Image (tube, rainbow, N blue to C red):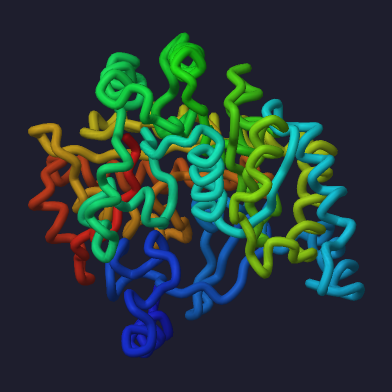
Length: 429
């Protein structure tokens, strides 16, 4: 494969756009510069085409929003129909009420809904609401919650530009470690507004863990916020809270709810949402109707075609197949996550993570028409034929790693492009 246009566009983008991207997880610093596709031109179903015309099976799904597939006719028709009536107006549109009703019918903790645009908008709104409702300032968090100051204050080195004093108002507890949470609550007792967490990051919750978090927060008068930006509309239609039957006070949804259109929301119990009506959660494009039309159509499509069940099934085939190949070739690697989304971690002999092996894996996969990102994600357009082909390619890559003695130094010599130093990582604590 040739990547002439990718290289040309990257050179131009570097002069015009900091990091040459709007989304750090998509940027060239995450991949091999030179022998890798760095810009996409179009997509359909589970396939994407780069600017040089190369075609790939895509297992990133635009970092999670694509739940059905790219460029789906039913979703496009809903967007076009609304487009003919208007995009945004000088007053709210009735579609806001329609979508709010639908989400409330699906999400256990949702009694009221506020729409915004990005995951960070929703998590920030939830934190602000919790602080206003409780009259307290400190937030305990576990996981990744976006790019706002309240979160980045606890996330060096990505806290550059964030006032240092904000670090006093946020602390981190370790996922799946109930003692860690208890200790943090004990340290700042009566000052904590909320616990915000990804209910299911790449680790599965231990038996009874989420239930115990719910009990502890309730006992201490702390609001529990589930960041379901990823699990919402993927793990189940009602998110992880529905799947595990653990109901938070507030929750944040986004990504897959509109199959790629930009929309997110914070939902919660009426007594909390009503009492914070004076909290400033407002944005010009919060009521943009094309995304809401897409969300309504996406939810209906997910229900009609049992999309979530399908994604669990095809994801399970790749999950099990890759685990089998890791054992077959005795590769120093492990898969973490769930069958609907997971990550492969390559390791060195001392058990440290190997960025070189990760990059080699991605590099070899694209040469065979498969695009993997950080987390492997699925949509309804992935079928068994794509999974079978992918497993054949993965086996070829594992053979090459095995032929190098699973040695990072030898594998590095097989990479011809520029190896990046990763500047951005999502916190999974």
